[in-house]
Image 1: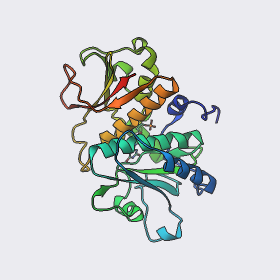
Image 2: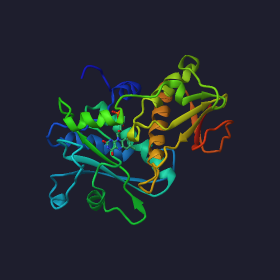
Image 3: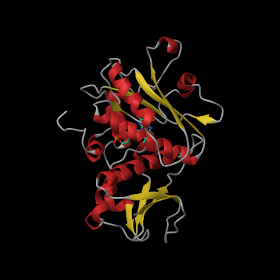
Length: 282
Ligand SMILES: Cc1cc2nc3c(=O)[nH]c(=O)nc-3n(C[C@H](O)[C@H](O)[C@H](O)COP(=O)(O)O)c2cc1C
């Protein structure tokens, strides 16, 4: 690895990319212990509980369980499986907390990819003993990236647009939704906003919209039609990921603030665009 990822969260965010082809080797105990330690110590801005567990295909106890990823993922034997109670804040909390783990994994050379659809839910649910009131929205393969991406991975990246992102002022606005905000005018928060722009999202839809005013940053979700088909709103997870990118980058730059759920009315809010949370400057 040519850059040192141990120092700056913003470097890690820029470096991370979804990995779908792994080296075909079991993950070392040392790496699993490091990830477990991180999992034991993360927390998020909401009260909701997130259950997660590292599971291994080759564990004796999983012998009769078929942990499948529909051929999308190659050469991996370990996963982080997650389970939450079914409500919106739990989805955001999951996005926030798991992205902390994803970026930590990236910083120690471990590849990951968020899987919301392309895994065999029933089989994974058996391993984590998912309860009736819980859902298992995400499974995260963890492993050392292979040197070359598989053909399926190249196709997936082509379909989802991989590293393509919207331009800054398509997601960041000033005062209300009629005025786009250029990165050059975003001041000391330009970088945290840019880190939101680089965040991963389901099908690379990038549903976050942020309105900036004197008090702070108001996060909205621009819902993609038909995206609720799984019985929960996957884009709330995208929002949690974006919140983590924003907050962690702001902290790195010594910019202080806090999250507030108090509803913020913004003029000219487009259809299908929902207020989620504000970051109020201190
Ligand atoms: C909540 C969520 C669910 C996702 N589900 C899948 C999935 O089921 N299968 C898959 O191959 N990629 C999935 N992805 C990965 C996205 O396609 C990927 O993050 C996006 O295209 C951006 O590419 P990048 O991660 O390489 O920057 C998911 C990402 C997120 C955040």
